[in-house]
Image (tube, rainbow over all chains, first blue to last red; front, side, top):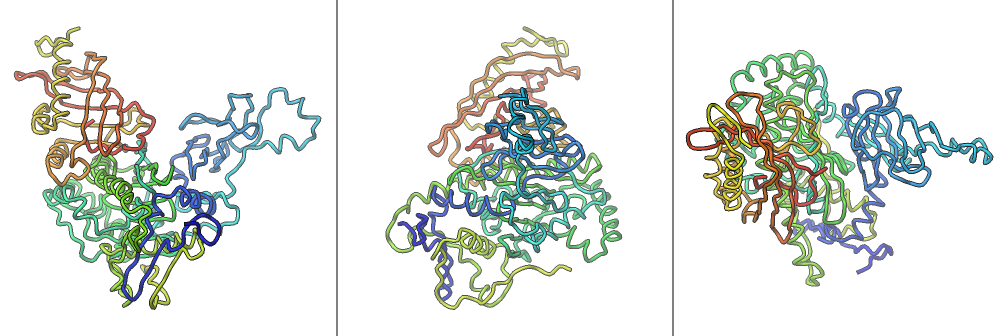
Amino acid sequence: MPGPDGTGLPGRLVVEDWDALTFRVNRVAYRSEEVFQAERDRIWARTWLYLGHETEVATPNDFKTRTLGGRPLIFCRDADGDIQAWLNSCPHRGTILCREREGSTKLFQCFYHAWTFRNSGDVAAIPGKDAYEAAGEGFLDSMRLRAVPRLESHEGFVFVSFDPDVPPLLEYLGDAADYMTMISQQHEAGMEVLPGTQMYGVRGNWKLGVENAMDGYHFSPTHNTFVGYLRETGFAVTDDDQYAYNLGNGHSLLVLTGHGGRISMLWEPRFGEDEKVRTEAHRAEMDRRLGPERARYVADESHILFVWPNLLLFDLEGLSIRQLEPVAADRTDVRAWQLAPRGEDADTRALRMKTMVSFVGPGGLATPDDIEAYEAVQRGIEATAADTRPGMDYSDMSRGMVDEVKGVQGRSIDEGAMRGFWRHWVDALGVEDGLAVSGDRPERFLEGRNVR
Amino acid sequence: MTALIGGREITRADVEDFLYDEAEILDAWKYDDWLALFEPGARFEVPATDWKGESFFESGSFVTDDWDLLRARVKRLKSRKAHAENPPSRTHRMISNVRLREADEPGLLRVTASFIVHRARDGEFDAYVGRYDHLLVPGDEGLRFRRRRAVLGHEHLTAGARLSFIL
């Protein structure tokens, strides 16, 4: 049913009922190619997107190529050491300029007509340049590499925007920024991305991946076998004292204190006795460096941070960066990197890799079941497609609304973080009548978290 | 092609039989029988698709199972609650290009081979292609894995990528 704003998108994408205390999401949001295209235009082309980490291009002339929001990019450090993001497309005819996935080079040469560019964007050589000079001096300038309009970084996390008019990055990140700072404060020597990128595709909409990460409710049933493994290794997994926060601007956070240990910060038996000694020493150093209160937030809590719209930081036993790249309404590419302290003890590093890869990754003991969940939802929602009975083609995310109306902070096993995500989504999409509200909606929702 | 390991003569046919037996065991979901093909303390590794030979102890990967994790993986796969493999994927394995190579350590045989695993599940049919790079130990009861490594030939894992089954 075409919407009233002429976009072809339906209204009632998100339906909140504050009498019945229900929150429902129209399943067209997961399956419609029109919605997917509207997201490309109104979200991915208009907001800050996570591109990569500065340490992925650690030395001058390092580069990686990566597609973001469907656009091929070159992410590099130029010869002067500045981070750059270029459209990976020759200004001449649009050929993919760099066909390598990664490497080191001062010059990018297009194979088609051999136009050559410095990694600072300047034209280095155009064969038979004389033919163009009659056109005037501006020609070479007009053929510089095309930059992504905005690029800023925070604590080594590099973001770009295809819209030149986005607000400054720190303003956009808001309360999410401090959780990224906490990551950088975990170790005095700082953090670096390690080699070995998990790159994989799932047959599910990207928003299912966000929901899954912000959903503590699924953990016990979905990860039954992984929880069993954790229990056998001596760790009692609990849902107690775990909370979910909306941080504003679509960002959200789970604070997990009953989930598991944190390598080099919060010891548990499966990490072994040697690691216990190293953990105590490092934890004492953190107290001295950060003060006990800040050190407690940085060291003792696990966090899953979602930075709208494509970045998930799994700050758990170790730290995994996950980037979501929607490919179609029902397909998403995922990239995941391990972020680890520089100069880490070799045994601690080995423990970190074993622990993180066994949990978060498509070959681990837990993530395959998450992927099973996104894919099973994507296939299952076909059952109600175009069902005209009222409310049939909707998914329910009402859990915790009973507490939300009382102003009680939502737990990680509630669905409040998802509701915040979907409210931001429907607002970003800008569909008239996209949000339908009935009953007395709270004037404001709990937002943010004071940790200072 | 033969190799002499610890006084035992191992032929390529011996190694092929071992790999074919393993393929049959995995395609039949006989995970206990599969685990019995490893010597205690063995490892199972699947590097990331951008792997350039870095240590599994210092880099990200798809699978880096020590003996504890390998046993946990098998226990999980046997559970009805391993949702990603319940119902189990149908797999069909083809192995070829088997080569016997010298291992760095005496008493071990390094074997490389090409594999194609086709996997059917949820109405999809996906192919996983790559190379095995195993370290085998000859013993009284035949060959056993000390290191079982599956190196994918893909640039990245396309949709259908969850490696919940054994590659």
